[in-house]
Length: 123
Image (cartoon, rainbow, N blue to C red; front, side):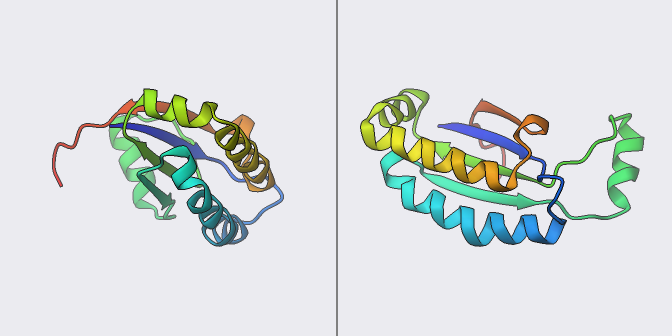
C-alpha cells in the first residue's frame, strides 16, 4: 500500500475554524467524488488540536517550532495503480479539480507532501 501524506497550512486569510469547516464540509466530499476514479482506498483528515502539550512534546525532543493546521492521509493499492488512474482523462480531470479546490483553502507553498510505503505496526 502507498500513502500520500499531506501536511497542510491554511491560507492566511482563513481562521482555523473556517479552514477546518471548508476542509471537512467542502473538500472531503470532493475527494470522495473522485475516489473511485483515482483509486483512493482511504482518505482521512487529521485536524490539529491546539494544546500546550504540543510545546512540551516539541521542547522535550528538540523539535523545530512550527505548526500545520492538519494532515491528510490518502491511501492507494500501489504507486503504479495511482499513476495508471491519474493518467486517464478522468483521472487528469479529477486531479485538476482537486488542485483547484486546494488552492481555495490551503497555503500550498507552506505545506508539505510526500509518498510513504504503508506499514502497519500496530492497529
